[in-house]
Image (cartoon, rainbow, N blue to C red; front, side):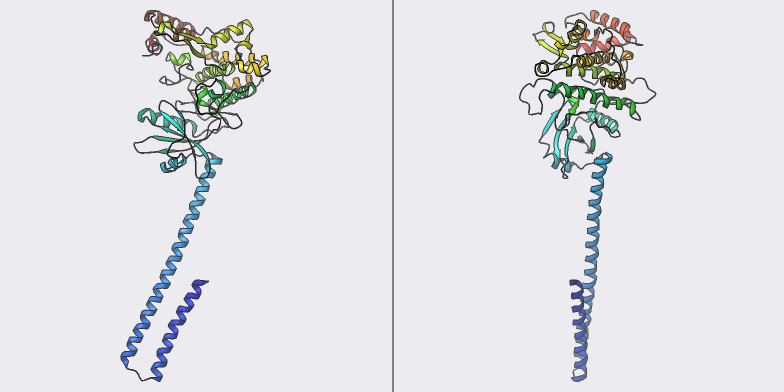
Length: 448
């Protein structure tokens, strides 16, 4: 409206000048030079007027274009937000966004051998966990493995990958949803030190539900994805708890994709000691049954509230160290009918626990940690057993020879160790040549 008024005033001014000149010409006898100068002035005024009109129109179109671009950018951000929150499509973040979201990476949530995790908040208020993968060679492999494994899967008990950030000759970043209650280890093991992390003693009911949640997540990875996904690092530290204490399986840095027609894949030992399946230690290849083995060990830790392997006495020499292996204790109590003695004492003192549930969980755990991979159930069958949809039979006695091998005194001869490993491989594992695996396994056991 104001632009129209300004244009009208300018037009009337020019017309007024022209009328004045015409009247002066008719009524006054002025020289021709005067009229030339007056005409030139009018021409200049008209030229300025035309320039102002063109400039005003240009500015109007420029402002309209900027408004349109801002609107489109806002719509694009809304679309990205929609894709991220609803469709689960990972997006590419700028490094500056992650730097601002994490307050220059100050809030450290956890740290591993090759990566650190920081808490952050995006501009739209979304809480995130930013994983910074730092080692170049192994970091690139971990980054690719994690993206390949988790980017295309969607499950309520699997962590959601929101996006990523790649810097030239720098660290890689993976952006995950933030899980508020931290990892499972803080909720089943007694706290040590003064770590500023959430934690406590998880109730028996919640532990049972967590066991089902994790089993469902692994079952989905093994059976319901286009390519089977092997997690290969199942442990309490990689199981997160949300605000409702539902389990979320995370950290796919060691995961492996496996075709539907493959029975096993060969990969280097990269998991966590204490959770590795025997066939992996003996270079016999890994399969989804390797995750089942690790799951069984985690299940025992949830029942007892203690680590599967713990150091009782630490001497100056290897031979003076005394280790406690919790699964062997549970196995003995199971045979004696005294399973309640292995349940986390904090739960026994505060809750009325159903011994039948304890027995079911222990039996499932021992089915999962059978040395022969073919004897272990699938994770889909584990879910059925946990939900009491099928009968859980008493598992066969497992000798746990691998654990005995790992605890052989440091001063024992290599010949003794090799003989024990060869006997184990020949007797317990299917289809493996012990002569080709002894040398490698010796290096694992001796720590070289």
